[in-house]
Image (cartoon, rainbow, N blue to C red):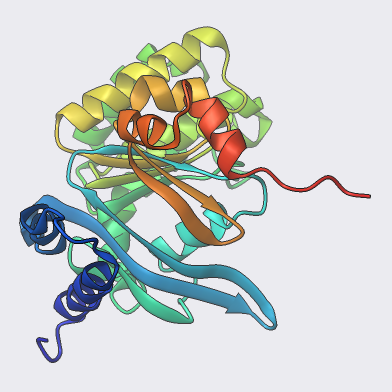
Length: 284
């Protein structure tokens, strides 16, 4: 174990846990490849992350990794812990225990630097009531230290694709839910983040806007951006993601490539797999 290196220590602990569970004749080479993935290929690293609120256990030993450039779906029923996990990654909350790193930085201790690497779109974007969409974009560009003129040129081009250009000079507070989602996506992508965290990004979007969202996400991933997003729409995950992490009651219950997950659990669709793994007893 390497003293003073949380990522190396966490990987060593995980390596030992895997070895303890290995059946005879397993592929040790594949195990070592997972345990010692080169740091430059790994953007998100979470190991045994736990979060409690008083006596309530919100997250219970969450562990998964996301390589750079991957689109990963975070799935779970309401109350599973998805939003809490996002807040930990953003450095808004501090984990009770465990390791959460973005590009090798501690999500909480290095939260100022980490936030420069992340673009976040919440489920319900909230904006200053006295600023127009254009003013919000200019303010965000200035806070990120970007050249405002060139950044706004980029933002206006993307706003045209999203059918939002004609509303940039209107107050964002007066936007519909779908328009707020579009503006939120512009703000999340404004500074060219390495990681996009999207919480229910297509809620409130019409069919055309949802299709445009697909295009933008695929383009971002193609240019190297890593994307972690949550949704209850399984067809969106099937269409966009190569991998998924399913959590329930604050714990990871399945993770891996989509096709591998369906084969492993003998389910023909991601939706049937999700329902099988998250099934709860009926209330009396």
